[in-house]
Amino acid sequence: MRDTLVNASLYQAGWFAMVLGAARGWPRAGAGVGLVLLVVHLVLARERKPELLTVLAVGVLGTIVDSAQAFAGVFVFESGYWSYWVVPFWLTVMWMQFATLFHFALRWLSGRYLLSAVLGAVGGPAAFWTGERLGGVVFPMGTWHSLLILAAVWFVVMPLSILLADRFRPQKGIGQYRI
Image (cartoon, rainbow, N blue to C red):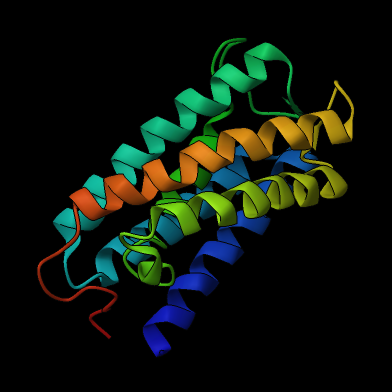
């Protein structure tokens, strides 16, 4: 239970730092905090290799998916772009941090792909909506239109992320920190 709370707290602290950093025009500072918390997770994780592989795979997947959506105009981020066709670095870090949940706080979703799809269709848009309320993202197509698109995308992306996490699932020490 303690490791689950630590894991969820590291993620939430990073999420808020990155969204608020982007909203306030400090995307690098937010990404820096997120990276530090990601490294803390990796250092503390009992099984580092599966964690690192999951973090990298989901980070790439999320960056590609969100870059395509941003390019299509589903959302626009307030700051931190590298180029017009790639989402800001802080969002890549956020995806990597999100991946840290799959062997810890969200390990109960392992193998539950339909449930993860439904939760993704609700949770993904909810996170973006919260980010929009905090000023980190804008929905140029309108809030409801963007949220519906996000729901459809997250219906697919969440179980795909769980599938990747299951692919790299550690044989022992799942959901355990070294503390």
